[in-house]
Image (tube, rainbow, N blue to C red; front, side, top):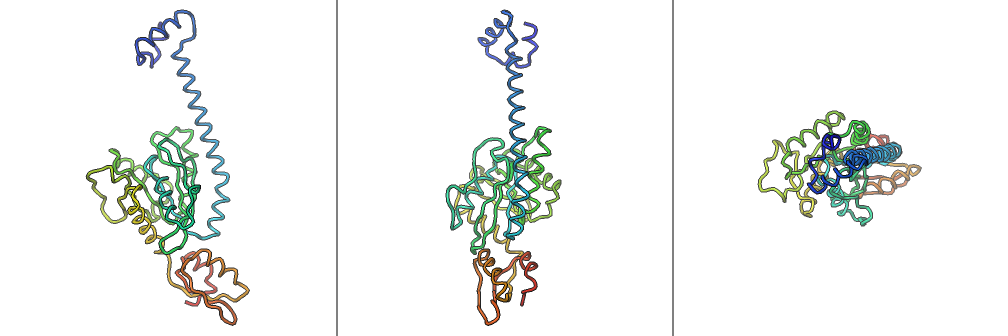
Length: 298
């Protein structure tokens, strides 16, 4: 009985279960409470190992994916925030507005810890028809086991390559202020706090009153409301198109493949075929303006 009483969880059991456990101990069997605690500990360690293994696989493929994205030059929007605030739901609702949407492009959504272990990259479309990429990062959590901290921060480093961060917060959470501030601290640690950040207060349908922070770098939505998702998409478009300007370029015919690439990337583009080359007018990103600066006319 001494070993049983010293087990921290023993007194939490119902009386009938206690009597059964006492009988087992008195009969000389192994302390079942200690045995259960040891089994639980092993299950937790096994889960940590599985998570670490999956994160290593994510990290291995990340550099290849990043190189492809940089080469394509398509703007990237990264969603960050605590776990279970609706990040994956927002990704799915945004890609539903794309012309080539299909159900299999949606990301996994479930109200559980670590439902998203890596970054899910999806192609989406702005109101003007231009494409952008949206990525759903792993959800932040409190009191993360020390063994996983480094791996999770490594995964979050992907947001350093984003053009816009959507900081999604649960407006109905009683710890809203604390969780929002904690997320901002992590972004500062990752040296991305100077990037354009739009605070997305989600689940507004679950609150009666809400006090917004000063400024206009926020939007209040319910991810299940189609009109709200359209408003969010318009805000995303405003941020991304800040880095675009109207330009005219001229490509000799030996560089006609570049024009083809531009047609793939930009929906609003005017093309004129002349004797010695192709003139192109479009709203071009700063990155592409620098990339094709030798072909700029204005």
